Length: 211
Image (tube, rainbow, N blue to C red; front, top):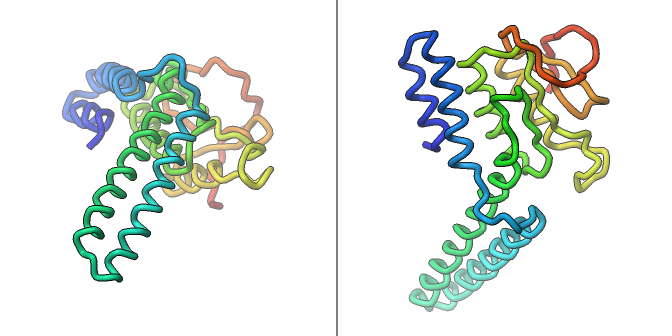
């Protein structure tokens, strides 16, 4: 269980009035601790490049391990497998640092919005899940803004991958939402009274059924 999930879990056992205050404190604390970048001069591209390097090394080592196993050298196969798994762990750690780099600069609870640019699909859906869980406890904002981007920077230009994944999550969770900013963001009904400080245009919330 991650830091944020642990903090949210502690909040669930409290009274309604205490939940909102506790969720705010827990969310801020969790994001500050879990998503604070340890390197002030690093870039997202550099972090991702390091992750890709370790993923490549993992693949090479695991392939060599399989080759050694087929030759009957089980000892060599085991050693290469261990090294390959170590490289995989390093790659995963760099991906976690990338998430820290992207989300550590934001204030999702205070602003009522989260920007997913720079995240991979699984990272983005995890971030949105945590974001919605925290706001589900605080219920401060009347709407929440999830910035997904329109897909212009995806591998296939103008073919978004994060937005459809987030839309599917919202649909499955039976959230009411609408597309805004030329389909580059999603506005989700929040259940509170406070308006977010952003111009999102006019329109009514609809419960989308498509994925």
